[in-house]
Image (cartoon, rainbow over all chains, first blue to last red):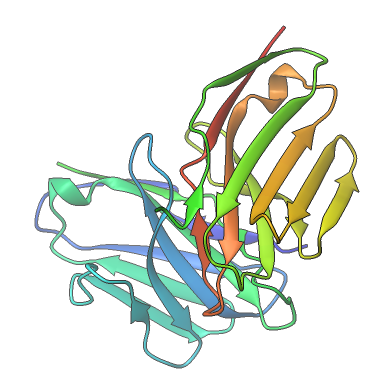
Amino acid sequence: GAVVSQHPSWVICKSGTSVKIECRSLDFQATTMFWYRQFPKQSLMLMATSNEGSKATYEQGVEKDKFLINHASLTLSTLTVTSAHPEDSSFYICSARSGTVSYNEQFFGPGTRLTVL
Amino acid sequence: QKEVEQNSGPLSVPEGAIASLNCTYSDRVSQSFFWYRQYSGKSPELIMSIYSNGDKEDGRFTAQLNKASQYVSLLIRDSQPSDSATYLCAVGNQGGKLIFGQGTELSVKP
């Protein structure tokens, strides 16, 4: 149980284009999903927290107009990187937490590697 | 002071030995603690969670928590080359978020 999928697993795009990444909880309902970014040799950096049916909460320094997050259902959250630039190239990982899981346990998706040319 | 601190390593142990990974945290009111394993190029995988002081064992893995010392550790018995990965310590805060350490790179030599 507690399987989280992400799509696509990797994407290459041109500078200035937008990229959408999907995160799905496959076998549980995720009341909260989290989006992280990880640069090489660094730890995970939380970008935002999204709760189903409400606006995402962004961490300090993360541009909410650039990284659009939608959590339309209990099993799906999307991250759209708008007007992507090479510095946005990174490993984007989502995680999901079920309302029935206590104590902050999060299950991670496989990640999406974004390369902006 | 970082909120969650780990030695970055690399920690090198021979196959069959016990690997000991350590983590300290700064928020005294933290109640949930996790160890994730991350292979290169992959996303983190939850291997242990612990919420109470003491030891928690799962197969070859034992997590140890000491809230008074703000310390959590992970022991891996009978280490295998397949255990070679980066181990991330994560602490849950009251806002429901996980705070990650920088990770410790473990290398198990055959």
